[in-house]
Structures are given as C-alpha cells and as structure tokens.
Image (cartoon, rainbow, N blue to C red; front, side, top):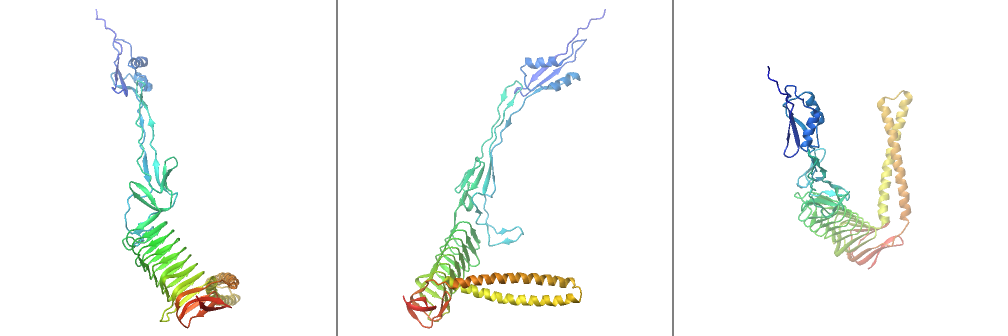
Length: 460
C-alpha cells in the first residue's frame, strides 16, 4: 500500500527593515494539495508584525497571482521625510571690487574709468533673500511619523544705507550713494572720499553723492557729482562738474568747472567757470568766469585778464594790471541778454542767406520741371531744398521771437555796480546791462554804476 503524502500549505515569511522603512515577504509553494498563498494571509502576516502603513497591495496581489514562490517581494514601504531647504542669498552685485578699465557693450575700453565708484539709487534691490523651508515629515511602515530636518536661515548682514523689505526677502538701498561691500555686508556711502589724487590710479570719478578729494585732480581727468565736490589740492587741466557746491582749496589751473551752485577756489588761473550761484577766489587770472549771482575776488582780490560775467554783482580789490591786460567785466542780466541777442541776430543773418540760396535752387528746379519730368536725383534735391527751407524759416521765427523778448527785457534797468576796493587799470572793459565803459586811466577805490544810460566811476 503506497505511503500517504501529507498536504503542506504555503507558508509566509516576513522580514522587516530595522528602521521600519520597508517590509519584505516571501511564500513557499504548497505541496501535496496543501492550501496555496492568498493576499489575506500576507496582510495578516503584516498586521501581526505591526506593519500598517505603506502596504503595496497591488504588488502583493500581482505576486500572489503570478505565484512568485520563494521570491523576496517588497510588501510595504515607508514615506521618507522631505527635508527643508536652507535659506540662501542671491546678490545682484559683485562683492569683490576689482579696479580695472571698464569695457562697454561695444567692446571699447575706457582707461580713465576704473570702476572705482558703484553708483546706486535709493530703492534699488541689492540682494534677494530665499527663506528656509520647513519640509514635510515622513511615515514609517508602522505608522509612526518620521521628523524632517528643517532648513537653516541664510546668514547675511544688513549694512548702513540699506534695509530689509518685503517680509525680509529683499535688501534694498535706502539712500543714493556708492555701493561697497565691507565687514561682510553691502553698504551705501553717501559721500566718497579719495584719500589721494585723481589720476591714472583712480580714474575719473562720477558719483551720485558728495565727493571729497584729499589730493589733486590731474590733467585729463574728470570729477562729477550730483551733490558737492571738495578738492583739498589743485585741479590742473581737469574738468569738474557738480549739481552742488564746488570747492577747490588749492586752486584751478587750465581747468573747467561747471556747478549749479557756488564755486570757491584758492585761485583761478586760465580756467573756465560756469556757476549757478556765486564764484569766489582771491585771484582770477585769465580764463572765463560766469556767475548767476556774484563774482567775488576776496582776500587780495585780483582780477587780471579774461572775461568775467555776473548777473548780480562784481567785487574785487584790483581789476586789470599795470600792463593794461585786456580784462572784460560784464554785469547784469541785460548784458548777458545783449550778447544773446547779438548771437541770434548773426544766426538769423546767416540763415537768411541760406533761405535765399534754397529759394534760388527751387526756382531753377521749377524751370527744369516745366521743360520735362525731373530726374530722380533732381526730385530728391527739390524735396530736400523745400524741407530745409521750411526748417530754417521756422528757426528764424523762433529766434525773432526770442529777440523780441530780449528787447523787452533790455528796457528794464537794474541797480547794479562793480566795486573796486583798490585799483582798476586801463585795458579793462566794463559792461553793465547795455552800457559799456572802456577804462582809460588808473582809478582808485571806485564803484562803476549806470547813470543816465552811461557807466560812470564814483568813489567807493
């Protein structure tokens, strides 16, 4: 009689990762008609081992259906935590300053622009702050939460002249100035100080705020500011431009100064000054000076050679020299207007001739047109001539209107005078409004005033 075989059921074996991040099952093949594996048997085995989360039911069902006996099958998997992202800072400007010639978008290198100044306007973004994120917790296969690592805030400093805005996500400039990076923070300086000279080592200076130069400004270099400029030394062959006051304590030599406010200098030699306010210096020698207020030769008070124009007054100790140096002093708005009128009248005379020439060209072309069709070149010439004549005639009308305005203004008189505390020499020409006086003798302590339309010198 054959031996009866005992049925052997399929057996589930379960292994759980020590960190409870995954569970694996395997099941044996049934024998002798024993019970086969089922999904419920596997689920029960998982539950008996406290595996309650992340069960991969689809994978289990597939493995059972395919009768994947004695294979290691992942039956449960955890959800790992999502760590937070650390905060970061994105700077819009380079923290490292390199002094080198600046190259423009066309590839042209300016060897006098070394990038020493980095102008910035209030409100300009300096950096973007990316805040850290919290992340999300995970869950292990037993259903216990797994904490995430939260992001760390970025480390940064907020320097002077800047501030955090937009819920601490942006650093912006709060003032106009020079943006620099120092002490691990961007700082906006409202005043820039050059401890030495403005020369090839510094390049040109073009700054939105106040500029202080402790040395000199040398030939061919330029200093510009939307505020004030103070130069402790000399400006030689330089150009100085400011919206505010200009002070050149050493003095000016062969330089050009343009200011919307006041100009003061230790001396002025063969230089050009155009000031919206007063101009003051102990000595003026040569050059050309214009002031919308007063020209004051203080201290020794010398004005020798050159051209001086002021709208409110001129004060000096000495005007001219023993050598009868040609010196022109123009005072009053009317005098300035007279010069403008003369210039406009000359322009109109030139333009009248141009209009006359264009008229002759048009007449000639009209004659050609009567004889037959004009060539394309002559048609273009005719069009250009008409266009230019209209443009020039319009400009003539504009100039005539301005001349009429000046004529009305010249009828007005102003109580203006030139004060000479010591001497005025021959060679000096005084012009007050529309009146002119050529000084032909040395005069001491006098004041030039207008009486009955003439300039006269009266005791000071």
